[in-house]
Length: 258
Ligand code: HEM
Image (tube, rainbow, N blue to C red; front, side, top):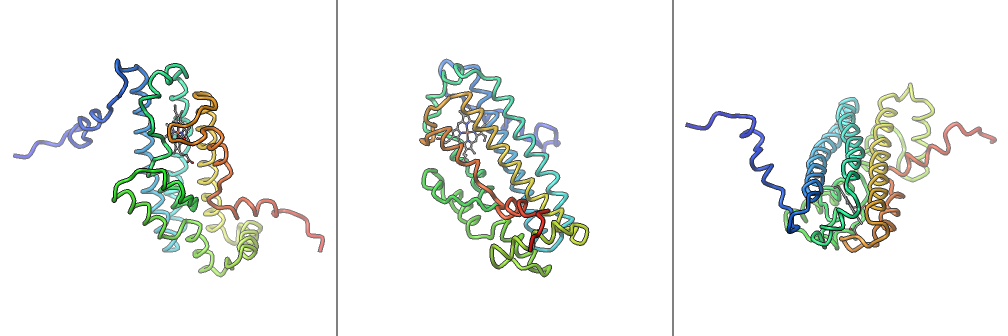
C-alpha cells in the first residue's frame, strides 16, 4: 500500500534538510547560514523564471492584464531578495574569513539560474558563460535562452501589433513617449511598461545591495570567482534590461520649442 501523504513526504523535507554540507573542519557556525541563504536564493530564482516565462506567454498572446498578475508576484519576490541581504549581514567579516577559503573557486557568479534571468531579460553578457563550469543540461538551458527573444523583443513585438513603430531606436522612443503622454488612451500598455521598469529597477536594487554587502564583507579583495570583486560588481550597476524605458523619461514633459 502506498504511504499516506504528509507534510514531510509532499515537501520532501528530509531531502531538503539533508542538502546543506558545510566544508569547514571543525565546522564554522556561520557556514550553515551561508549555504542556506544561497539555496533559498536559488529557489526564488526558480520561481522567478517560472513567473517570467508566464509573462512571456501572456505578452505573445496579447494578454497584458493577465501579465500583471505575474508581475505582482515577481516584484514582491524581488523585494524579498533585496531584504534577504540583511540576514547575511548579521555575519561578521572575520567569521566569513574563517571559512571563505573553502569556497574557492565557487561564486554566485556561476549561478546558472541568475544568468538565465539576465538572458531572458535582455542582459546578454555571453562572455560570463566562459567562466562557468556547467553540464550539458545547464549549457543547453542557457543556449535556449539566448536563442529565444528577450522580453524586450517581445515587448517590441507586442507594441508593433498594436500599431506602434519600434523598428528603429528613435521610433521606439517616440512610441514610448506617445504611450506615456497619453496613458489613459493606452492604459494596458502603460501599466505593462511600468511593470517592466519596476522589474529592471528591482534587479538593480538587488545588485546595489549585493555589492555594498560584498564591500562590507570582503572590502576590495578579489572574488572567489576570480573577478576583481567590488570593482567588477560596481560596473554591473549600469546594466539595463529595458534601456529605452529609462531613456524616454528624459523626454517626458519637456516643453517643445519647435
Ligand atoms: C558573503 C557573501 C557574499 C560575497 C562575499 C559575495 C561576493 C561576490 C563577488 C566578489 C562576486 C563577483 C564575482 C567573483 O569574482 O566571485 C559575486 C557575484 C555574484 N554573487 Fe555574490 N557574494 C555573496 C553572497 C551572495 C548571495 C547570497 C548571492 C545569492 C544568490 C550571490 C549572488 C551573486 C551573483 C548572482 C553574482 C554574479 C553577479 C554578476 O555577474 O552580475 N552572492 N559575489
